Length: 310
Image (cartoon, rainbow, N blue to C red; front, side, top):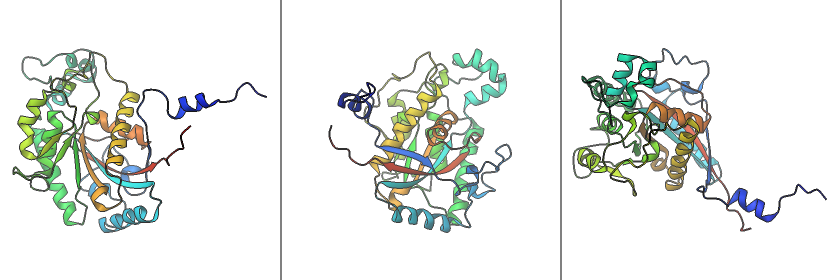
């Protein structure tokens, strides 16, 4: 008999052992719904608004009917969600990158809070251009809604101010109001920008975020600390960022384990690095997204069947 045979402890270690959180879901992107899925689409000159967000179906009604059919005709363990992955508008750190160039930014300026003229760390605000980009998204959404696009029913944002500001300017008067009963935007640490190294990627105090955004209905996740306890001088690697995004997707699909339209259309406002990590986690093609831009991805989640105890 071979000596290279798994025993029950080996199986336990592989499937249930260790300190890593359990991953009940696996994820993949579903191509054919948006032009951004197609390798032949040139991302260097892609016009998001002129291209109806990249819609590759005859109409938004056709897309919604096909997504509804996928959710209705597949096993209960398969769930399809359409994620609208938005990048925040231009922040002062983006302005600084354009001012100094990427190499000088990475080597020197990104480790400072500013240059004596502008401030980009920690947690920079949107520039006026950034605000205008988010407001242009608002107008774009109104145009697409008039054509039958589905309005998201769940909203998530990175905790960074530039992301929260973008969500406000994008969704104000659509899903957000400055009233007592606005549609909530949930603030999640897992969809923040790449952690560490750059001062622009250190978040503000929890109390500051609450003061700025709770009047718009923002809700901060449980366990969100006052100080940024995740930030360090070391820059997070892309594969680690991808694991964070997988954890967010696990949360999203387990929380909204349903197949109705109330669970299907999701807005996520975050960062270029975070969207790059989504692309990694979902094995989607790489696609450039400008500040204030957005990319829709239809995501299939498959939930593992309950395993018998070992």
